[in-house]
Length: 347
Image 1 (tube, rainbow, N blue to C red):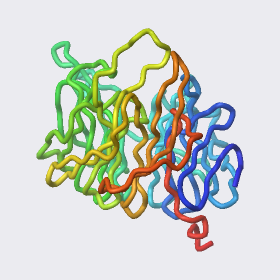
Image 2: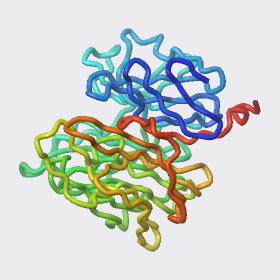
Image 3: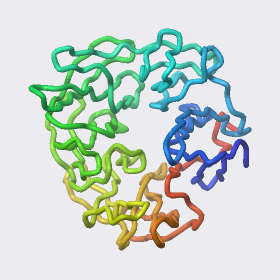
């Protein structure tokens, strides 16, 4: 099927790059009918969300009720078919502030602004990384501030209706890539004591009530970028992530790769398993199959100063197999495993 640049197959993995746009993220709706596709220019600029009908490829015009075409990021589906959207327009959308978090019904284009906490004593005025709980009832997100001139950050939770707002964790530094576990018991995030996102971060985990925070792995590349985000296994026990194998330095070339490989950590025992052994390559977008047996990822190398080549690889989660499946990948395009289209709405 090919519609609006979407390419996929029933076997699972697809990429998307219409009009030079890259796929940063994709998520199937709870009923399997729609795909939410987060698109962006690889060189920066426009960021937008397309909602695509899974079987027909038709693009849903979900923003018809808004006064301007919204630009922003997709943050997760609710069980009832609504989704959370962070808008980035410089022009406000009918009293919605820039970087406001919206709850959107794609069928009616109706939306409402989520009321997130503000702590004036720390200068907190905007939510950072955000994750929706698997049951769609709770939000977890980071909120930045300053304490005695030093950057600090808290992890907050609240019900989707705005009730029971509370800070469950607080630390000096920055937090990115918040992600709620599939069973709702844990939250992972990437923490940096320094504010420079080019420096490696640490993969941390805590209970969903904020207790028992601990480090799982060090050396996580550029946590502010989508392609470096760690990924939960479907059963919520394991996390796949990219990790530096050697420091990345700027050598005057146009493209700087995070020289890395893909790993899996057992969140109960803390055991880390290395799944690839590339040299002078960057791995990105680790993505689990629905049954938790396989992980797909993009492996990118460089020829000359600014020539990149990328491949899609698949590995078994137990490291028993590793093999390429495509040579035409793009460095900046995410991967997504999909069930057969016939499973959507019984078709």
